[in-house]
Amino acid sequence: MTPRIRQVVLDTTDARALAEFYRELFGLAYRPGDEPPPEGEPDPNGNDWLVLRNDDGAHLAFQQVYDLPRSTWPDSGIPQQLHLDTTVPDVDALVAARDHALALGATLLYDRSDDPEEPLYVFGDPMGHPFCVFVG
Image (cartoon, rainbow, N blue to C red; front, top):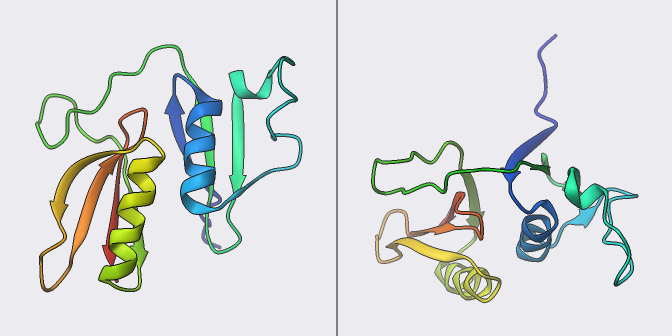
C-alpha cells in the first residue's frame, strides 16, 4: 500500500485571509463547517485550521501560526519552503490567470510568459508563498 496525498497545508499568520485568496483564485469550496461565519461573529476555525476542497486533486489546508518569515525567493535569504505548480491550457488563459491572481492580491515575482517552450508566471500569495501558473 502506498499513501496518497490528501492535502497540502500552508502555514499562515492569517488562515482565513489566505484561504479566501485561494478559494477565489482556484474556485474551491470550504469543507462543511469551515465557511466564514456571519459578519461580526467569532471565527474560531479561522484562527486555527481551514480546509478547501478540490474535486480534481489534493485539498488545500491553512494552519494558523503566530510568526512566519516571508520567503525572499528568488533571493536566497529565506527559501520558498513550499510552492504550488498550477497549469492553464494556453497563453490567453495564462494572461487571464495573471490578471485574476493580481486582482486578488498576489505579487508577481517572476515573468517568463514569453518563453516559447514553457511560458509561466511565479507569484507570491498574500503571505509570500510562491506559486507558479504555467501553460501545460
